[in-house]
Length: 578
Image (cartoon, rainbow, N blue to C red; front, side):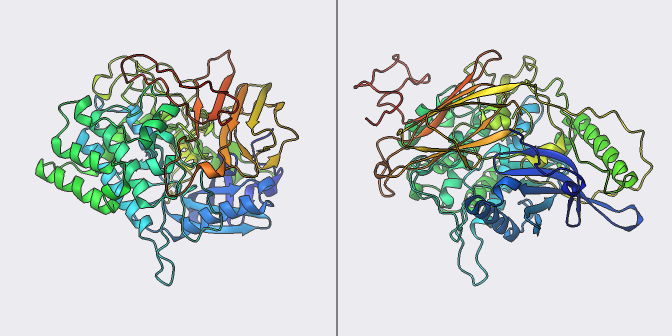
C-alpha cells in the first residue's frame, strides 16, 4: 500500500496559493507537507499543510472527523496554542494550513537534554505552566453566541507540547480533541488517547471533561518531579488496572528529595475522582507558579529556548539547508516540472540517554491517533508512535544518565518534520540572502519488500477496516508493501464498542482485537474490565504482535512484590468475554 500522496503530477504540488515543497509525513487519515507562499521581492512564507488523504475525502465519516479538527483548530487563537492560518478546499482536497515553528517537541527535549544536560526541574515546570495556559484557552472556548464548547484535548503528552528555540511553548495536535458540537460522536467504550497519560475515566471509555486533561498534565508533573516515567516497564493492561483503581505512587516514594509542595500539586492532579482534582488548568498552573515563587525561582522560558537551541543546533542547520535548497528549486523550475520531495532522515549522534531516553519511542502506549508529525523513532513518522515500546526497568533515570545512548533505530527527522509531524509549525522566513551551495539531498526510503499483516477480531462477525476500507474476511491475512507508513485498523460489530489502532507497515504484524460489549461500558459506573492495546517491542527478525483485549482478573505487575498472581478462571485469549 502506498502511504504517500496518491495524486501524481504537478497538480499534486499546488494547493490554492500554497506550493508544496516537501512531504513531512503521513498517517492513516492525513498527509502533512511543508509549503511555501511566495510574494514579491523574494518573500517566502513557510507553512505546514495537513491534508486529508484523497481516498478518505469521499468517506463522510472520515471527512467529518477531519473537518471537526479543522473547525476547532481554526477557533483557537492563543500564544500557547499552535496557530491555524486557514481551513481550505481545493476541488475535492481538504486541508488545514498552520504556522511553521522552529523548535522541538518536549519529548525530544527530554530525550536529548534531560537533567544532566541542564534542563532543571524549574525549567520543566515553566514549560508545563505555559502548556496549561494554552490548554485553559481551549477549555474555555465558546461558540459565537457564548455557549461553552467544552473542548477536551484528550492527548496531553510531551509529544504534543512544542518548545521553540526562542522559548515559546505551544500545545499542538488537537486531532482527537472533543468539542461539544463535534459532528462525530465518540461512542461509549471507545478509548482515545495514550494509556501512559490517560485519566481513569478516559481509560474506562466514559465521557470526559477538562479534568481528564488536568490528570494527563499531572502525569507529566509526576515525571518532571521524579525524573522518570510513571509507568516505566509496566504492561499496558496493568497500567489500565491501576489507573481505574487509583493505584499511583507518590513522587516522594520514588525520590525523597521531591519538594513537598510539588508532591501535593501532583497528587491532587492525579486524584482518582475528577471532583478531587483541580477544576481548571489555570488553577493548576497558578499552584505551580506559587510554588516556584516560594522557592524564589527566577527561571525564564527564554533560558529554556537558549538551552534547546544549543542542543539542537546541528539539526537546525541541516534542516535550514534542506529547505533553502528546495526554495531555490521552487524558484528555478516552472510549476509543470516541480515535484515535492520527502525530507531525508537525519542522524541523531550522541543523544543523551535520559530518564526519558526512550520517551519518543515509548511514551505512547495504547491507542494512538495518526499523527504524521513525529517522524523519527517515533506520535513518530508516526510509525513509531503507532508501534510503541514499553520502557524497561533498565532505562536510566534523568538524574543518572551517564551511559551513551544506544544508536537510534531510525534517523531523526529535523525540526521541520517534527513540527509538521505534530501537524504544526510557526513564523515567517525571509529567504533573500545569497544562497549557500546546495547540499546533496538523499531521500529516505523504507526497506523494499512486503509485510504480512494478520488480523483476528472477536466476535467472529466483526467488520474489519483498513484505512477506512473493509477487509474481505475476519480473520484476515494479507501482504502489503513495506512502506513504513502509518495505517489505521478499525473493528466494529453490532452490540459492541468500536476499536481502532494505528500500526506501521515496517514489519510483519499479528493483531488480535476483542471488542467490548456495549453493555459492559456504562457511562455511570466503571466496568469490570477495560480494553486497551498491549504491544511488545519488536525485534529485528521477529514479527510484532499487537493484542487488544480486556485485562485479566489479575496480572503481573513488575512494580509489585510477591510474584505473579494467578487468574481465578481460565481465560480464552481470543475472547476473554466468554
